[in-house]
Length: 524
Image (cartoon, rainbow, N blue to C red; front, top):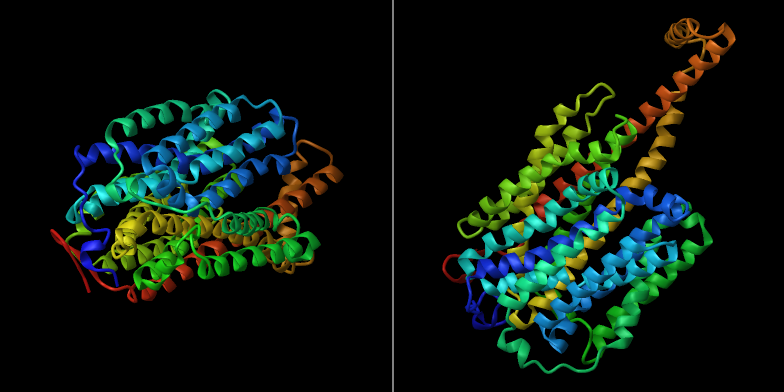
């Protein structure tokens, strides 16, 4: 293990109030995370405006995630090579300018290229912000600082669809991108004023860019993201191109790992995985990302597909989760320095699992107000996981490895989120077919209940149309009810699987080593 004096927990004593630094670096992180979800509700409008199909327009999301995932783990090398402050400012400039070109795009190709550049600019914002925060606060306040950072990372995916829906309905989908410009300008000004590079950054000597590792990583993560985004539409491994993409992904990722372990001057330092807390923390944040992004995806879809809500109202219905997170982050940030972090993390997974079980009892007649309390509680549980898990995972890293570790840690969360969304969407589609087949067995016309329902709808429609037409409309109404019930059961399956995954994480949390921060560090 690294000696205590070399660990990240050593305070670098910034010249200014660390909370000013916190505001400066949280702004770009919030801007980057919210942009991963804000465009999701704009896809139909983007497609219509740019004369593209919905399938073609979804590449707006895919291209962003592709370049973002590649740059994210490489951000530590860029920070050491060019200076962390300069690289952070450059990333924000690239992100902000490309946001303008996204909003001003007049063709599908133009917006895809702009999103590719935007994702590259946003790739380094999260790990750089987290590394700067970690170093700017003394150990006893580091949990509170991570709590503020967590507000951006956890609340942003919740607010993204709501804000995107509002801007699209009230103005235009283009404003979902233009809104980044004032935030980016403010972040640049604050960072130029308050953020400084520590000595080990300014005095760092790094070799040339590991182009082999960077290329293998780009191929591997790019193939993975394309498979996850397009797999369900093309029947997964039933499509030949997905089989080839999977082979390319395996070759790219395996080759990347081998290159990083056997060569010098590599893109990332995989030796940090020798630290138990870091490895287990990456596994847990992977599961955390899968659970959070799955819930963020499923609940708005439920309101839109089952309850017939608009994009704006569905986003508004799930926004109370942000209230829970806002309350949780500062409270948990204070508790991190005073109690065993494993208690907080395991409680967070447990509570989120219970909320998922509650959502697994959805019915066609449930009121949206019935979901408000569990949505708020689930937001609180996210704070219980994110803050103490971040502190515990990064606590024992050498100071020089914080940027590298933070990049890998955030990458695991993002990959977990992408896989989680892909899995729950696949379950929705496949289990809808399964439940529809099962429910159809109970819809034989000779069954009294079925005949009674058909007679009721036939008599109802016969008030307005002829009897033959009324019979056809009655059969169609029964079919729509069947589809809704089958779809509802597929949502129930998803939420119950989410609960099971969260419950499985609870015992894994207790394999972490206990780390306490009380005016200093003691790792046990």
